[in-house]
Length: 576
Image (cartoon, rainbow, N blue to C red; front, side, top):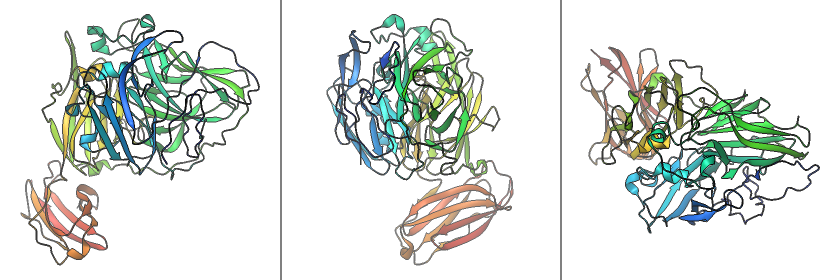
């Protein structure tokens, strides 16, 4: 059941794993912890099927000081969407701003017309109903602005919120309820307080809009009262440009349990990790060794990077202070393992794409493969169900958190090294590239066709042009031939055979076998899969697939068609 909205100051009672709660006074506090700061805010939970109304509103972000910001249903940050996997999400987004908007569901696989592409803008005074089935794994996702050349400004001024998917099947006795805490981390500028001034100059367009103070869930100088027990923290970097080096002030260890696309296959112990804009990491932290009355701070550690003071990457920052106040127990544990992740096999890659990132300083210009974003241009097409390797080369002096819409990918290597940091391993939709670094990812689009985006999630870089359109098309070379319904299951010999550079394979799915799941795969003589031409539901009919193995050597290969209990194989000979 989707969680209901929270009444201001009330605690929502729900049985499911996540409980986002409004500010309230904790009970059974044994010792008060005194200190400066503001109690961590928690936005209300959105009721599925309702309105999400954007407006410019005056709120007190800093106590006693008015700030002009973008609110959603009067809330800053935007309401948290919490929904179970398998449900259909629906929201009517109303634009009461004076400029165009779209809403992107970051990390969530949705139909192309629901993705918030800039071409699908909502003009001032208009509305748009987003509706889609939630098919993603349980995990921490989010939503935010995505209008053309307005994304950075609107996110900076408040247009963002959590989109959390709960999977009831993921029952690992993790901390839940008040012990499952979402933390949206964003930086702002002390000199601008109480405003969110967004007036980027050449420096900001070059390096991104960087601040020197941190808000968490829209709370300045935040603290959270915690118990001497295990907590689950969902960290979202909602900043425009800042990359954080996450650690605790006492250098304590914690367990990384989730990345952008949900739980890892097993917890990994760590003391620090990098968190770039758009990335999410979930951790388990245990306060049981703390004494009541003590505190510890989540920080961003100093590191070396380009740029100029006072607003540059790598400056040390306090994020949130945890005040230990009682002995309540979460009842949570650190599991030995989670459900295994099916990692893609690089041998199954059917196409490799290379993306080179460049930038020039005067005027600032950010490009991918020498191109800047053109809303009407399709930069490439990728077939549904095709496993591709994307090789991303950072030819610049800045970091670039690269993000793909619609799919979750898997990081294969950094500079050729497959021994990856734990926050890289698992399902990802955003990966940060350091200056001069080359990262390879494996990606397969499995659910929807249509137009999507690939871009840098440094939002100033995105608005400056570091974004491309791509179209997900029909599966590789497969199409139905005519309307005749065959009476038998057949895999016909390919033609031509031998072949170079391409061949066609016909197959029949009999009427009695309609609505089956079919697979058409290619194997080499050693039995290794080298291509997947089709994998999905299929109706009765006659089909033809085209195979063009550009990167494979001459030799003997085998095409195998399986559907239900039926399986047939043919031999193919490639000559080059």
